[in-house]
Length: 121
Image 1 (tube, rainbow, N blue to C red):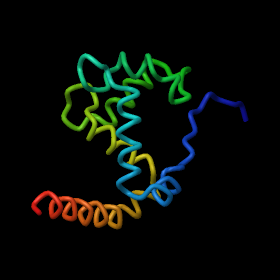
Image 2 (image 1 turned 180 degrees about the vertical axis):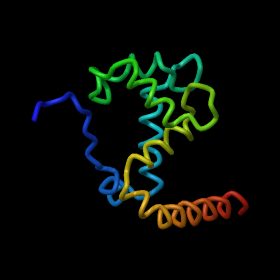
Image 3 (image 1 turned 180 degrees about the horizontal axis):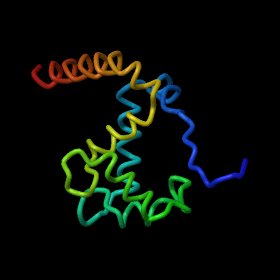
């Protein structure tokens, strides 16, 4: 069987969530977004993703693969990824996290309400 240049994704996200907690993990995803964002536009564009693909270990990614990645995560159809779309895409890439997403959602809601209580008091 001939070898092809295939991007393999090893799912480290469950271990990261276990170590960092849901809030810490979301902060890390936000940091990842900031690494890839187009500073002028505030979103991840084709150009910013192509320019920064080496940070992801994907410097050999073709233009077509970059476009496909953007399309996969572009929920509002604007051709770019905002932070919410980026985080959603990253979570979708992790099957184990998707299976455990209910627990993460519950933890995030609890943390949100706890933060609201602190702000109110």
